[in-house]
Amino acid sequence: MTERVFSGIQPTGVVHIGNYLGAIKNWVNLQNEYESFFCIVDYHALTVPYEPKELPERVLELGATLLASGLDPEKCTLFVQSDVPEHTELTWLLTCITPVGQLSRMTQFKDKSQGQAADSIGAGLLCYPILMAADILIYKANRVPVGEDQTQHLELTRDIARRFNNIYGETFPEVQGLFTKTARIMALNDPEKKMSKSIPGSYIALTEDEASIRKKIRRAVTATGADPNTIPPGVANLFALLEAFGGEEDAARFREDYQAGTIRYSDLKEAVAEHMLAELNPIRQRYHEIIADREGLKKILARGGEAARTIARQNLHEIREKVGLVYQ
Ligand code: AMP
Ligand code: TRP
Image 1 (cartoon, rainbow, N blue to C red):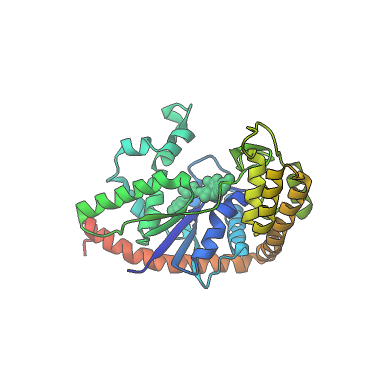
Image 2 (image 1 turned 45 degrees about the vertical axis):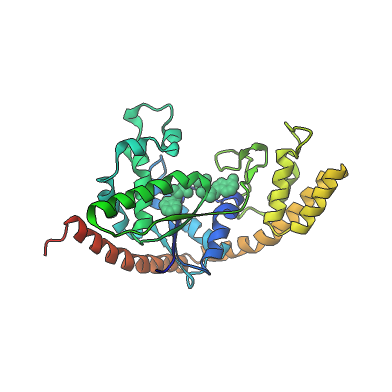
């Protein structure tokens, strides 16, 4: 059987270097090895409050960011989820075989609904992982690159697929996660926490300008809350960034300096900035070129949508027959 990869990313604003190192860069490598589907999951973005007028712009910006980072429409199918409405029909079919208890035990659901009265929690937030399962299963994808935060959702996807196969006959393959080796990138201003778009000052956006990147790295917290016997989290984060942006040799040297007690954080930060900018400057440049040609960008996404839809339609037809929804 062909190995087919599927992954999704939400168009919810800033794409930061954590997203790039933890997800996007991995996709760029996978497109060379697998038949790959990468999806801008706009239906998922509707599960939390958002501005409808801004959503189309967010989708295009994310599309441009993914292309600028190296996704190649000749090598992978890059598309927008709502261009393939078959995802939502499969979601309904899968919703009917998914226990509410299992959905309400999902950590992400518990986190996002915490402190809210049941009457104000949207059912979309509860059903979010079924939509994710449908995204994957409608292409019968068997490899899914995600961050560790999505492990539980992948287990649910496997459960749903198994239950479907048991009830209606063998249809979906076993889904496996492809977890990135990259370290979790921590907040620059608070390195005990994960770099996140919800912590101001914690992140560097992928298309941020050079002066601003340099400034943020210079200000990165290095040595708070440290246990004297271990590398402080802010310093470990700078080492991780240096390694992730191709500065492994420099990082090895700085690690030695750290052991010897001769490290100069200003030099370490300078090296991080140089390696990061060497990779991000061309990405930013391509991003601006791509986003300036909006019609060209829309065409690329539409073409991806058509290719994805052809497969989704075929698979949904088979699924409809199995569940008894084909009458002619
Ligand atoms: P989010 O939009 O924050 O859910 O992030 C989307 C994906 O980006 C996650 O599933 C992770 O794979 C990756 N990611 C987000 N934040 C980080 C981080 N700080 N370090 C590494 N990877 C991250
Ligand atoms: N839930 C994923 C996230 O927040 C995004 C996503 C939606 C996804 N559908 C998917 C990831 C299918 C992998 C496969 O990161």
